[in-house]
Amino acid sequence: MLKLPIYLDHNATTPCDPQVMEVMLPYFTELYGNAASRSHSFGWQAEEAVDYAREQVAKLIGAEPKEIIFTSGATEGDNLAIKGVFEMYAGKGNHILTCVTEHKAVLDTCKHIEKLGGEVTYLPVGKEGIIDLQQLEAAITPRTILIAIMYANNETGTIQPVKEIGALAKKHGVLFFTDATQAVGKVPVDVIKDEIDLLTCSAHKMYGPKGVGALYVRRKNPRVRLTAQLDGGGHEKGMRSGTLNVPGIAGFGKAADLCRHNLEAEGKRLGQLRNKLESALLQLDATYLNGSSTSRLPHVTNISFNFVNGDGLMMGLNKEVALSSGAACTSASMEPSYVLKALGVADDLAHSSLRFSIGRYTTEEEIDFIIRKVTDVVLQLRAMSQIG
Ligand SMILES: *Cc1c(COP(=O)(O)O)cnc(C)c1O
Image 1 (tube, rainbow, N blue to C red):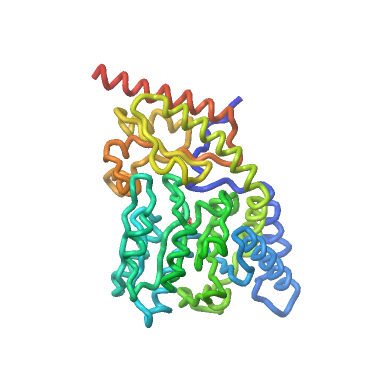
Image 2 (spheres, rainbow, N blue to C red):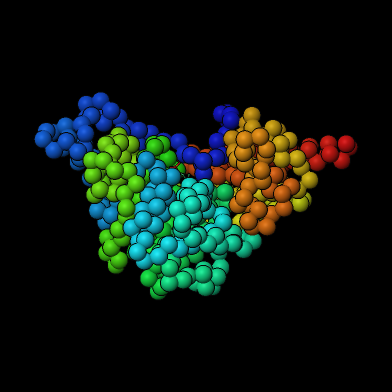
């Protein structure tokens, strides 16, 4: 029997893997030390857990443990990377290059930087959601200090040409920061091969706990320096003060380890399920894929259903299927997704689009159910609107 509702919103958050939970539990009870306590075994044990997790997270992205700064999540990492570079490199310049489809944690941080006197260029994307590399290179000026382009988009799953961006950044002596929250643990990410200088990720997007993440800060070729945004006890090499979330960090490490070991097999399995779902839904008339069909995450598809009302679509589905739509609720009004808009998707199509993001525990039976359910609801809504 299928258990309803079916969770298809893994880009919003993932469930915690039971193996991750198991690793975390002792750090709430017996092993409750403060990782910064140097004078007793409680502290040493906590520090040991943090060191081990640092190795596990580093390994997943090809970094050195020393290059991992633990944060409260990707929002904090995005803020620290952008504001930290802006302040530290003020003597070199004040120009940041980013793109219109970034997560709000990057876009709103850039807006803040503009208020502080920074200059930000928001690059457009093509209809597949990918930036133009020539346009990127042409936008670099002697005052440019940072390129901030995400690895994979949270709404569409589209993957940017990260390696090429890294190479361009290096060629022009500009730092490259990537919000890789949706990519880490899902596709191979390698900070050396991709020439990434700063990278954020978050445990709760990869089967770890909420409220913990990491910022990778390159230590050589070049050595990246940041101005701290949280001052205090000098934790995390002075870049992020505050008592470490030891249980969360230990769980994050385990989550990273599980992802690293299962990356290939899991990507393949989820890719097959996603393709099955996607090709079935695209067989309906007037349905369109949003984002790239080639350069993308394996577990995500974003589809617009023409001639259906977006609210009706969501209401018809949300008792049985948990997913996100292409309309974002902003206070009173329903705004179409700015990401889909940037791809050139018309407002009404953006409203009637759905993001399906499947995950570790999604079964083929669930996918079959969802295909039937979405098909039924779409056909029903279309039939009704023809009668009306
Ligand atoms: C989820 C997400 C964030 C925010 O992460 P938190 O850890 O929840 O703060 C930032 N960027 C992207 C691309 C995301 O998907």
